[in-house]
Every structure is written in structure tokens, then in C-alpha cells.
Image (cartoon, rainbow, N blue to C red; front, side, top):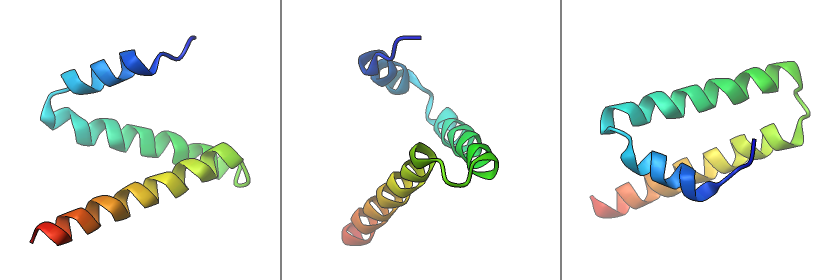
Length: 66
């Protein structure tokens, strides 16, 4: 499968707002399962590191708007 990030951006942009939490939850559970099977997998650990950073940035932006 060839990865085309432009296609993924388009698909994400077309998602219904109610579907976004489902996608995030599915992505999280996929990587959580990978982590339980291979706790030292660098790609999986990097995913969770980046997810944590993104959550912190969004939270920080939300706090600044209040």
C-alpha cells in the first residue's frame, strides 16, 4: 500500500465531526495493542510521544483562549 498523505488529509477533511473521536480511538487502540505486543517498538513509542505532545499543545491553546 502506498502512503499518500494528501489523500489522507482529504479523507480527514471529509469526516463528519461525530466520526473524529471514533477515528482517534481506533488509532489509539491499534497502537496500544502494538505496545502490549512489543513494548520497545520505536515507532509505537514515537506515536505515543507525538500524541502526548499534540494533546498538550491543544490543551495549552484551549487554556489560552479561556
